[in-house]
Image (cartoon, rainbow, N blue to C red; front, side):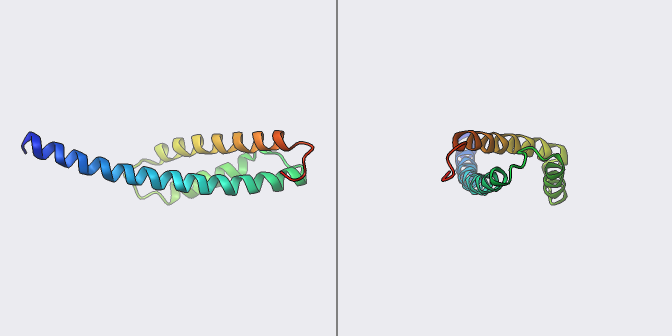
Length: 103
């Protein structure tokens, strides 16, 4: 492979990664909107944000549907970070809306 063909191949792969990244952001924002809805329900019912059993269910779901090449541990670590951010969003939204039922 020549340097030029290698650089062209890299550009094409990077374009593909950019497209996948944009789709991931779209899906993460969709997940976030649902998490915000869940936060509103939890707030109205005075339920805790942190639910370890539910997190275990999420981990089982995503690792059980993982076809690779990511390892189950890698998927779990990625989702630990996602869940941590979602929990932060719920906490911030709940704090912002304390006393404001329209939030």
